[in-house]
Amino acid sequence: MSNIPSELKYTASHEWARLEEDGTVTVGITDHAQGLLGDVVFVELPEVDAEIEAEAEAGVVESVKAASDIYIPISGTVIAVNEDLADKPELINSDPYGAGWMFKIQPLDEEDLNELMDAEGYTEQVVSEEH
Amino acid sequence: MPFIPHTKADVEAMLAAIGVKSIEDLFAEIPANLRAGALSKIPSGLTEMELTRFMQKRAAENDQGLCFIGAGAYEHHIPAAVWDITSRGEFMTAYTPYQAEASQGTLQLIYEFQSMIASLTGMQASNASLYDGASALAEAVLMAVRANKHSKARRILMPQTVHPAYREVVNAVVRTQQIEIIEIPFDQKRGNINLASLERFTKEDITALVIPQPNFFGVLEEVDVLTDWAQQKNALVIAVVNPTAIALLKEPGQWGKQGADIVCGEGQPLGVPLASGGPYFGFLTCKQEYVRQMPGRIVGRTVDLEGKPGFALTLQAREQHIRRSKATSNICTNQGLLVTAATIYMSLLGPEGLRRVAAASHANTRTLIEKLTAVKGVELVFDQPCFHETVIRFNKPVHEVLTALDKAGIQGGYALNNDYPELGEALLVCATETKHQDDLTAYQQQLQKIL
Image (cartoon, rainbow over all chains, first blue to last red; front, side, top):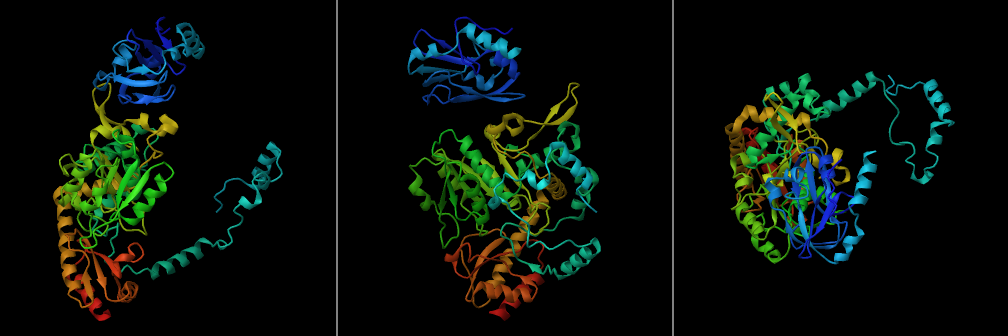
């Protein structure tokens, strides 16, 4: 069973979102997603200042066997991207919830986070996908 | 001999199994007005013997003549070894292999091809080839739109000095993809793009500028100035080049301060004979940073678990068998056999040989221009340097001149009055290294008689 931290919010497309103290939201892909993808070799991130609507494409994660789109969990403006991923995309495999974060957004409305799944809901999805 | 293996009994058994009376019933739901119907203009079949006689008679009517037509396809000397080796059984089946890594020889050949084309164009990465020069340019345009993160406009500047057929193909491919192609007129005296004609776009968001070298008229473009202009405003530069010419001219990777971003072109001059328009092959190279936006197959060199060198298809995650509708393009193949010929051709000639082909072609063309423009009633249309082609104009209808030349066994060139009516009775003429001084003189003398 993959690691699904209880304090994060999740999407059906396997992104996680974390509300930071300053009101920004950090986004990455889940441990389960990185496990399915295998060794990540390239990450395409959104542009800083891009305004993106919830569920729109925000980037691409490419592994040795597949390239998958990253969808933005809630509407907002991109305020930072993880520059380290350009040289070390493997951080997504080794530390998906930490050093492997992908981008930070200033949410249009923080309340939108409530629309996402909690750890329990996401665990159910992962379990049902595995069976 | 029937080529459909099913007997009448087979067909009836299959129809009975699915409960349908006739094959025709399977198409019943298609409205009659959408059905193609019988092919009324196709004659009934011939026996093999009849067909052979017919084709031999037709073939005897072919008259190759003395060819001065270029316009995108060029007659070059092809060493006999090229097709002798290419026609070997091991290569004749050289399609992009399905179980790719089991075909190390094919992969190595494609890898060598990529290395040679990358070196020739002065770029870092190459794919395994595309269908032809025109489709390569269309793919380069799509690639530029994906790759240029600075541009939101999806607008491409396309000089009218780019091959008219290439421009048509590009329009056909991109017009339904919300990409705007803006045509740039050329300088009627110089025959190339004038920087002044680009100035109105200086402040506008432009995704990419296409630069042909040499251009369709054989005239050289001012590639450094144009490249710098485009890149200064964050537009990508797509070079569409003749591979023979760039053996002699500055390679696109060295254009301007930063070099072209994407390079494409028609590979036919590299060992592929003229054959009624094809099959030819396109090439596409780019800077390393854009390699993930490059369409088509790419072969890489690697090592296996035991550390032994080998070749593998790489960067496949961008392709349609993995990425489906989000693939970088629907190109999932290459022109294997023609790439084989081109790789052998380039190996045999080497950089120096290719330069000598280019230099000899240029010298012949200059001699041809001198001879033809010495004839009364012929004028040179453009005043800028050219490679192995140029435009001349007659004082009488170009088609009359061509017909008269044809009767004397000379294919005089490519008439421009359909594609460029503004140039008048203009003809694009080309002389490659295959032409002897006597050939050039023969052309001059015939022209003298006609005019």
